[in-house]
Length: 203
Image: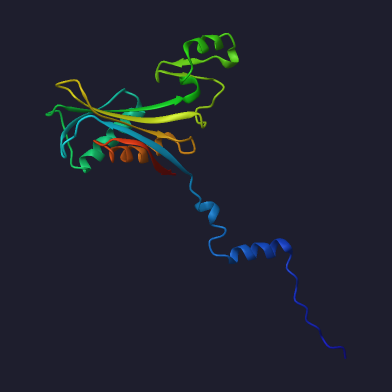
């Protein structure tokens, strides 16, 4: 009687590879856990000190939705830092946001006029954003700069007390998400002078 022989079944290569990957901790989840990481740059100039707990009247620079959102966030953030929000003092803090094209915004008037003769390259002026727009460039490309500008001035003298800005490095993080991280980081420097401070952004 012939002896019965046992032969292990060979796994197909795709199945074997899948099991091997599943056996490695963390692999398979990496792609789903992946975060978009970018950064913003902060610059600020202090002209006079801002007293801790100072009374600040805050206002958006325009009536745009983005300015309004940034202003409301700034109000909440400043209150949490011990500042008093109100109109009893002389210090006024304004919040502004800006989404503009680096390439188009830096063009001279002569360059803009020259491009008007070519419909494909025509530079259009946005009356809402006061910026130059190129129809060939989509809004969310890496040449689009998103900025938050905050200024503090003394209403009794008209002099600036502090000015600061935060600019998103690229368009991998959308403006609304970037603003949630850029605004607190900029307010961290309120009253200070800063030059090219890099702040990480995550989505």
